[in-house]
Image (cartoon, rainbow, N blue to C red; front, top):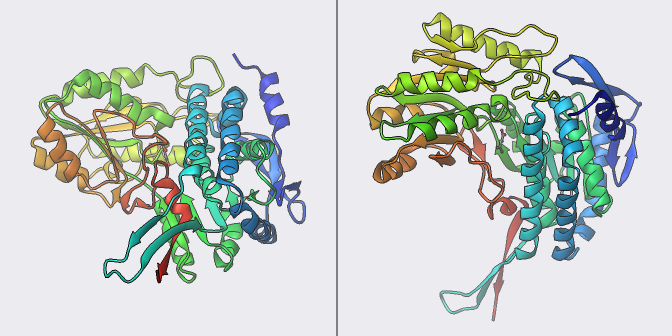
Amino acid sequence: MTTRADEQRVLDGVPTQLYIGGRWRDATGGATFAVEDPSTEQDLVHVADGTPEDAVAALDAAVAAQAAWQGTAPRERGEILRRAFEAMVARRDDLALLMTLEMGKSLAESRSEITYAAEFFRWFSEEAVRIGGRWMDSPAGDGRVLVMRQAVGPCVMVTPWNFPLAMGTRKIGPAVAAGCTMVMKPASSTPLSMLALVELLEEAGLPPGVLNLVTSSSSSAVVKPLIEDERTRKLTFTGSTEVGRSLMAQASDRLLRLSMELGGNAPFLVFDDADLDAAVDGAVIAKMRNMGESCVAANRFHVHESIADEFTARLGERLGALTVGRGTDDGVDVGPLVNAEQRDKVAELVDDAVGRGAKVVVGGERVDGPGYFYPPTVLGQVPADAAVLREEIFGPVAPVTTFDSEDEALAQANATEYGLVAYAYTQGLERAFRVIEGLQVGMVGLNKGTVSNPAGPFGGVKQSGFGREGGSEGIEEYLSPKYVALGL
Ligand code: SIN
């Protein structure tokens, strides 16, 4: 059980300044902004409100550190990540409490995120010493082909509020392993977890200037000068497709190297040959992990018409049994959404679906504040024109609709501009492969309600972006091949 004293202790312990060139300092002009607890709507703490000048100072530090950092032994870079992994595991409970306070999710969800986030450091500590190249005879016999892989250079990282640490560690981990320096801009609603992580990395031995942190109430004010600066070599962004498009447009003048992990609209397909118990278990995870505030959350459930009623009723029972409350309280499964805007958007999507004829199986009514609560909701018989089937919900709402053939299921699944992930439940091997191959996505959960794993390449196609985070592919985003034609 956590107490108010525990909450105050972790809040008192978190740094609140900018971290530039290995020094903690105030923003230019000394401005700060408040970080709110979404379960009480009260301010938790104020943090430095970085300016465009601070952002450029952070890039100056990253540029100054790049050559020496790139020359550091891979083993040393890997050991720093390994120490950071161990420190995160050791401090998991305090980091989780801090995360729950600023983001709202339950302590169990936050602990699971800390573990997930730390695993990216462990994974990339092992990748740091495996950066190779290749060597071959020129086919014409006129020399040799040598390919080496070098660090991209200073990277700008922009991370979202839904996974305040994991979305950072899966960028920082490979950048450290590859030998890139960084300027990190965390989401303004959840900067505290990243501030704590930067302090932890400093203690793990990350040299000054390698990772620089600029918190700011205005993302565009600090990110724009970084994109425009010719010393920046890469921008990596996790967030909405809309913001991703705008960043990409800004970056196009400089032909900046990009990784874009953007929005999703994940279909969850349940075929008539599925193991229904497993499908319901998977649906609960795919929908309710992170309270649905995830780009890989199942956004819409397409169920064979012969089993749709039973699936919907069973999902309703499971989601209706979850406890909503302040994430720090014992026994709470579902905390508040991150802010009023997010809660209102979720409520509007539900109201729209119900207005078009969807049936509320459970939930469906916003909860009185303070706090931005919305209950787990299952909607049955959702008509095809409901916005909830098209738009990313980012909340605990499960709309169920039906199909009557495999072709129709695939057509419904692919009828979206997004292509991040899809989930499919079937026990037929041949069907499984047809469906996997037919889905227009970057990731598939086959008889599994989660795909998130530091060993797998996370990323999408279509309007869900490009680039991969995690897996052996993840480090490639921070390396540039250099080809040498050898006249041997
Ligand atoms: C996201 O929601 O952006 C990523 C979720 C994950 O890595 O599982």
